Length: 308
Image: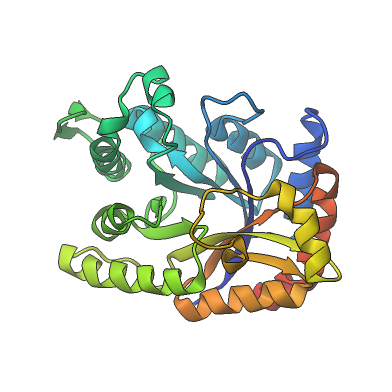
């Protein structure tokens, strides 16, 4: 199984709101051989958050090898027919480099309302949307009658160019997310999960996928983690602390983060590999002005170990 490491971030992590920062960073990712670049999805936000499909189209046009994905796209906020067309177009124009990972989105009811839907419908809408997109990518003249979406003799072109269609990876570590992955997903991309939790999730998904008669490839399990490379753990933790996502309160984020020397990051990745994950999205936890430095360190001390 091939191990691949990409870079992900939410919001605008650069020193100023100048788009040139993103282009310089993208160019470095391409130059260093980073596998993929991942953007999160926040439609309603006071902070600078790019709409990922638009931003990824710019990244696709600027690169030739770098893949790109969404970590994760808030599927219940979007119309699946329009989104299927967008992903297919992006995949077609980029030569098959699109990696759509999807999830339920934030827990803010106001964001669902602003996008014309209801938070209580998000699970059902997500399930139907995945089904609709896969049908539109793989068939013509699609007819689908669901609770939330209705299609009668619908065809979209272009189709994606990836031979097996863009794999729809599903995010989340809840029981519902694990079951959704096993039933409808092509892969699992989990964030803020320890290697032990990843191992448990992979085991559950494999068991349930067999029951649902859904085949998920062994190398379609991934994890997102934060990292900060420095001369010591103490220095890295001090740098990263203000830039960590504080969503979990049950365990310290050391359990799913890599702070310290590159050896510590490699140890975490190896633990995830032992747990069954082979695809990674590394999130730099650092001040905006250190983004390039952290990418340099990742490229020099981590990527060569795994990207062979």
